[in-house]
Amino acid sequence: MIKTNLPIVSVVICVINPHPIYFVEAVGSILQQTLKDFELIIIEEPSSASAGDILKKFDDDRIRHFLHPFRTSLIEQRNRGIEYAKTNLIAVLDSDDIAEPDRLEKQVAYLNSHPEVGVLGAQLHLIDSEGRTIGYRHYPTGPDVIAETMKLFNPIGQPSVMYRKSLVKSMGGYNYTRYSVNSDYELWCRLASNGVKLANLKEVLVRYRIHPMGMKTTKLREVVKATIDIKQKYFHGRMGPRALLRLWIEKMLLLLPPLLVLKLFLRMNLKNRPPYSGA
Image (tube, rainbow, N blue to C red; front, side, top):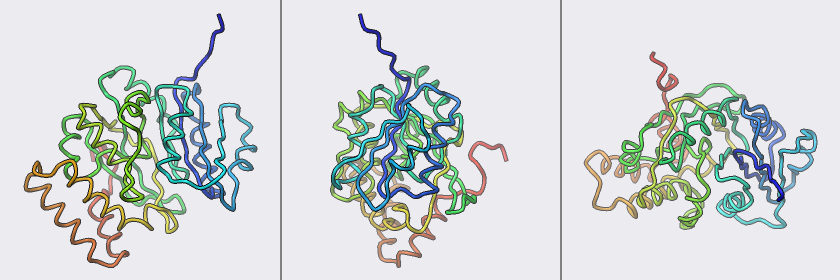
């Protein structure tokens, strides 16, 4: 009998036009994890820059690099990552973000001890283009609170997520195409509506980069539109006063200039202190 030694977890990074500094930092943050038994899957689509040239410098056999012959979409990239993953636990990271060294170790330990949880996120430390602190995103931790919070906003930070491949595949993977953003929020709502439990660790495990060229800033108005659309699809007739007020505010944001929308978004969602710091 042939014995196969599978890694404990698969990490998926999707990339187009890799930044020479940010992408190196993202990959390096995974290769320096305290948990060493993983595979790192790079899903690349063609651009003027090559992730392959950067990855050769790491010379690490845990890296699996897949270059698609033509451009598709982020949804298709993410779903290819799911297909290529050898393990049932999949962690994701954006190509310009940084995972804290103990991220994989803590998330794997939690999911192994909580088999009822299908999706696990963490708190986020927001940084700018130079790596300086902008603030923190605080997310609820318990499954029941998260399920209720979904009516207000996306309570799971996509770049911090680790999930069970079997569950996500059984629900059709990422498939939200009405807008080019927020496929993660739609997936979490779809999973929760089918009884899947989602949770967040209280620790900050990812440094989430916001910079002028990032999709996080250039497509913020589209994010707001998609958020409204998803809420109306999954929670129509089930929102309380607080959720309805937030929905109204989001609709009003669409009437404002993009730069003002970004400033208001950051003011609504950022905190000065790390979550659960006791300060």
